[in-house]
Each structure stands twice: as structure tokens, then as C-alpha cells.
Length: 227
Ligand SMILES: Nc1ncnc2c1ncn2[C@@H]1O[C@H](COP(=O)(O)OP(=O)(O)OP(=O)(O)O)[C@@H](O)[C@H]1O
Ligand SMILES: [Mg+2]
Image 1 (cartoon, protein in one colour):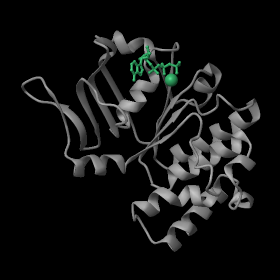
Image 2 (cartoon, rainbow, N blue to C red; image 1 turned 90 degrees about the horizontal axis):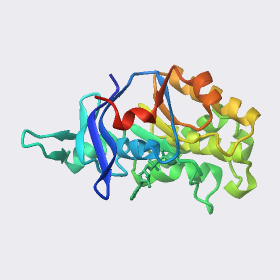
Image 3 (tube, helix red, strand yellow; image 1 turned 45 degrees about the vertical axis):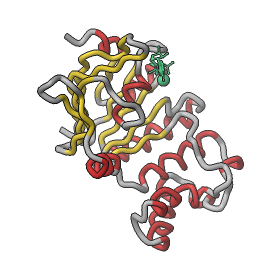
């Protein structure tokens, strides 16, 4: 089991959005998460990526714990060092891509791993070029994000997330700004990433895309009704 979520609870202003929710993600699996607006899909993804803290429950990748319940019934987050290890295994591609507007496509890819001193600049550039080639953007490495189409920006965001070798990759609405053709293209790319063993979680409003690409479809109706 790659990702394990047990009895997860998150409240906003005292009101649960997610309660006692259990979820797992396996190696190479593509889970698509569908459901009505405001039912907590983005919240679940933010909790898994530690962009938000849970009120209760356990979250771990393999045996790397992010948070767990103690015997006194209080949730405890891991130490900074362990959370760093957890973060290294998970990546998120945001709906609006969140590319750095003042950096080229190549610079966007190497910025974070360079700051984290993951490898030498030379090696990171080599890796970024390989990944950009893989997503079909080898002719755009010196372009600025504003010079790219939505689908191309999405592909840069995917290449950038892959720079950190995540074992789990999350996507929030990856195709909402794309036409059918680009959606199919991104879908194929995601399937290739999963074929390499990466576990994928995708939030989407596009039910057709969810069924086409997902090896399992999960609905956010279950977030408050999983007992
Ligand atoms: N930081 C926050 N403070 C207060 N309430 C929040 C916060 N973030 C989310 N919520 C509330 O939690 C609920 C779930 O929000 P979330 O963004 O997870 O929904 P979603 O399923 O992703 O919706 P959509 O499909 O529209 O993107 C909503 O009612 C929202 O108002
Ligand atoms: Mg959302």
C-alpha cells in the first residue's frame, strides 16, 4: 500500500467536511475523485499533501507517517525531518498550474529541486530536458509560460512535478481548462506516469475522463458517510 488514510476527519468552523474517512492508493493505480462542488475533494488532496492539517486520523506513505492518532485521542504530526521525507514522496499539480511567470519553462522545472539542493544544476537541467522532451515540449524550453497554451502549461506543471520523483502524484482538476483533444493527451501522459509505478490521485468534474482514465473511481459522497 502506497498511501494509507485512516479515519480522517477535517472540520471547518466546527463543521466536518470529511469524517472518519478511509482511503488507500496503490502503486501504479489511478484513482479519480468525483463529486459535487464543496464536498471536500480539494480539502482531501490538501490534507494528503500537508497543505492543511487534519483534526483526526492517520496518513502515511508506505511506513513514512505524516500524522497519526495517539492513545489519548489527539492527532500528532511527525517531526520536521519525517515530514520532509514524506513531502519528498508526494507531488501536486494545481488547477491553474501555478508556474512562475518570470521564469522560462526549463527554469520552472529546476527551480524547486535546485533550491532543495537535490542535485547539481547541470544534472537537473539534463533531467528537466529529458522530462520536457517526454511531455513533448522540447522546442519550448526557453519559452515563458505566457507564451504557451493551457495544455502546454499543464504539461510543464507535470514535468516540474516529476522532477522530484514522487511516488504519489495528485492532480486537482487537470483538464478543466482544456479542450477534448488536450484532455486525451494529458490522460495518456498520466497513464504513462502510472505505468512507471507512480500512484495517481485526480480530482475531476469530468465524469467521462474519470471513467476513461481511472483504474478506480471514488465519490466524495463517502467523505461523511463511510461508517
Ligand atoms: N480554508 C477554509 N476555511 C473554511 N472553509 C473551508 C476552507 N477550505 C474549504 N472550506 C469549505 O470546505 C468545503 C469543501 O471545500 P473543497 O474546496 O474541498 O470542495 P471541493 O469538493 O473541492 O469543491 P469544488 O468541486 O467546487 O472544487 C466547502 O464547504 C468549503 O467552503
Ligand atoms: Mg476543489
